[in-house]
Amino acid sequence: MSKSARLIAPAVVAALLLAVPIALPHAEYLLDIFFLVFLYGTMATSWNVLGGFTGQVSFGHAAFLGIGAYATALLTAAGWPLLATFPAGGALAALFSLLIGPPAFRLRGPYFAIATIGIGEASRLIALNWSSLTGGASGVTLNSAPSVVAQYYTAFAVCAGAVAATAWIKASRFGYALAAVRSDPDAAETLGVDTTIAKTQALLISAFMLGVAGGVYAMHNLYVSPDSTFGFSTSISLVIMPIIGGIGTIFGPLLGAAIFTGLREQLEANPFLAKYSLDLSVFGLLLCAIVLFEPRGLLGVFDRLTGLLRRKPPVARPLESTGSTRG
Amino acid sequence: MQDTVATLISALLGAGLYATMSYGLALIYGVMKIINLANAGVLMLGAYVTWWMWDGFALNPLLAPLIILPAFYLFGVVLERIAVRRVLEQEPIVSLLLLFGVWLILQNIAYAVWTGDTRSIETPFVEATFKIWGIQLALPRVYVFVAGALTLAVLQLFLTKTQFGRAIRAVAQDREAARLAGIDVDRIYSAAFGLGIALSAFAGSLLSLIFPFGPDFGQTLQLKSFCIVVLGGLESFVGVAFGAIVLSLAEAFGLRWMPASYQNLISFVLLVVVLIAFPKGIAGLLRSLRRV
Image (cartoon, rainbow over all chains, first blue to last red; front, side, top):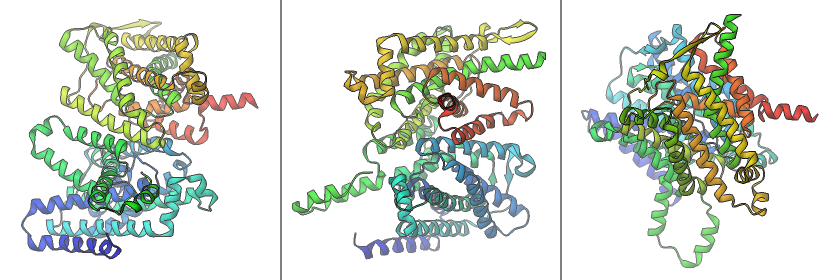
């Protein structure tokens, strides 16, 4: 794809997506599906800033989603306008990330990943037990939801904002610093990148975006509980979506989110799949296959396919193959 | 006083359980330097297989390990050969994600075969209690403690006295030197992974005597296992037993000051404190103190 096509294609897709509710204002199921893809896409994109760009795999990111969801649920109950609660939830999640980031980033690689399982679980337990604020296990119910079309545009705006932010990050100096942290933290340190600060900033951005996504989730679901938002299964889906789509890329998390949403819907519609909870196997097998065969995810598979289709001059081949390293 | 003694005894019994479920994790980490995130899934399947053989074939749950140990050893060896081996040389996070995928698949197997219902084993043995010095004790808890202690002894003997066990330790200490000394490192990896999986399944079988369980079983225990293994310094079984005692005591006595619903937080707080304060575990800390 040429450079201008790379800019034009997303703009065309965005324009088409903006037109969907105008063309089909009553296709509520379809709009709902799109809404979910935007929501999950935002969540996966947020995780990707830390897990993909910076290489810090977190199994506890549900904590930030939960904080955002509860912020929206509780603040709307206190009379705040809905849209104002989103940045508030994002800010609270970012604040929490500042609390846990510096100690957690003293750990590297798998140790960090394991500590994050603990962070997620601890935040769930706190949400469960701090009943005076969170209502405990029974959760919090919201009073009213905006119309389906309004929800669609809200989620679209949030998702587009998240994707634009990550595209900007990836091309910026900060993005290169994150890439350096991912590929070799010691070398990055010698080159003058303060790795702890870079990781903390990536976490902060990731947490803020997830906090906002949590608010969107609460607006749609009208009910938040510790298990549905802070639960480990939320953290799991946050890991799965970007990896399936293509970790560390801009559009990979969106692709992963679309597949995730589609599979979830299939599961609800298909009693055979639902009876045996086959989604777990599908995601588990996809994860294993991607890790073993194509670490760049489905976008990597796509690249290979288009590479096969586009015949290259044979002379250029050896140079190309040494230039592109896998993973 | 009576109260303190009762808490101590129950903490010690709990430590036996905690240690047993962590040996597999420690063995695999020690030899292969990867973290087996599928551990919780294996614990859960071990519990299910025990329950299933009791429920379907009236097999005494105490005999289930005779089938579980070889079956899961085989499973571990196969998993190592077809998947884990391919990612050993890559960044640690890759194996973590791979085994995470395996965990999801194992969970799915449990959902598909045994549904999401909570299961428990009910035999006279499981429900038996007895009194010693006026303290009421559950028989299965004592049994699990004894089994855990025996496992430690057998493992320790195996690793120090047999040729094969020594080869495993050699690979754990220095892979390249072991290879130069003529040890088939790939075979040791398979064996260690198989053994680690078998130990975790055995622990799951023991757990099924004490706790009711479902397909998500093992998630919080997983975190506790990590905590124990990190406390123990990630490599030695005695360290693991030590870590199990520390965690169990912290939980038992922590409950005196905090509500029971926060009990699972203790392991997390311990984990984070230890990871940050003593990255080499308490055993590593003691070792470095001794050297000074």
